[in-house]
Amino acid sequence: MKTNVLVIGGGTAGTMAAIKAKQANPDTEVLILEKANIRHSGAIAMSMDGVNTAVIPGNSTPEQ
Image (cartoon, rainbow, N blue to C red):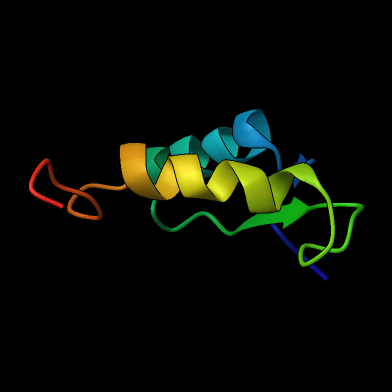
């Protein structure tokens, strides 16, 4: 497996690091590794709600 940027940990900080790396260079391949099962535990599942509503443009509006 090859990647340009490897982020260890899918919590809020790791998710933001991956997003910022991709925004800085859209051609960069970014991979997040999370130790926990996303469906049952782990920070990535919890942090993605915040990322989806607060960070990704157009994903949430005040009217929603």
